[in-house]
Image (cartoon, rainbow, N blue to C red; front, side, top):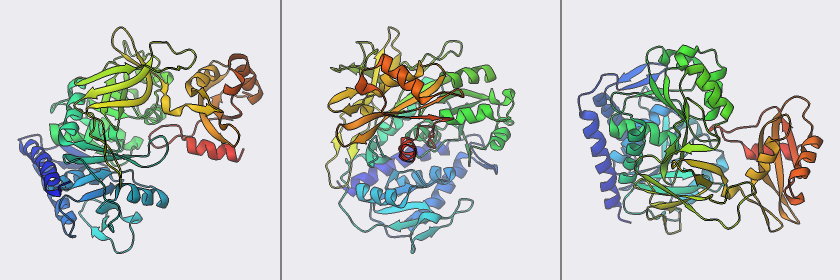
Length: 494
């Protein structure tokens, strides 16, 4: 890959951002709390220039690939376009990783340099002090296996995937822009609306709904340094309406806080992604605010896919709505489906301008998508064109050669008296390869023996959980997803 060509694609994208931000706009285009720090578009460009100058001090190669591991949201918003301005390729990863996870990223993505929080950087790193940002560190990385990127790559999203192994998703400028435009057009976001950022913008969900619409489409943005109720109170006291993308756990915390219903009603429109949205959470939100909480569906590999449009705030179980503008969805047939899943269900396949270039990794050729991405989701389409997610195909458990779909066991557990929530996952077994395990949340007095008896009445023996935890609440990650690694640890100590 020619670094000169990579530099051109990145600098062209920054030129678009520059043209957008130079247009006359409101002086409070960007707000950062708890300050509040307020920036116009022109002032935002000046801050990006300062970060760009700091990054350019070390001698990095043209078209440098920079692994970005920053927790501070404003620093991230400035660092990404600063790297594009220099003709580089930002590779976004979650901050706060363990030492082994950071080493795995270096092996898998072979960056030219790493930009990260000062507290996690090795000795000898270049300090980037750009007030009011926190201290950041930039350090070159010794050459490893070269990462082959498609020539038009301007961004790499990193994800652990279902196996926990780091994986890179390469995107071109046109794909980044198509994703932002699909979202803005479908949700009717414009320069006259304002968005609220309280989720990590390093993740695909936050990047596509908040960072790129702000930089590339000129949609004003309010950023919270941390998702604290007091900061929500300050922001909602100053704005009548804010587009708010969040994860289920964040919505549950807001509903349990002391924020008034009047203030929470200003979160409109609100969309939830990152983990399944519980019908109870959606119901409580509409009762509290009078506004629907919409299921939002997407993937790192293809951007936003669909968004639910509930009637009178009533969410349909499993429904993630019709495809967004610019997105085409079809179903790919699957030979064996879990019991209870309609025969018209299949693998969700996505086409459109936002589908990424493909998977990338050090020492391997890119695996191209060619405008078509096969998700790991099992779904169906109703007569109105709405997508219903039935489960994850990559969660399938292989018990001695026999397939077990976790969603089938979860439905049986959820139907047991007293169960409020259930999750099913695999555990290793020396004889059968894998076995079924489960964790449930329910009413006081819920007994493991009763749950297993219920399962034996409704499932074949090999699908009945061999290990089962009854918990007061399911452990969750920062994104609101069930933390299966923590569940495995709990089973080991049970």
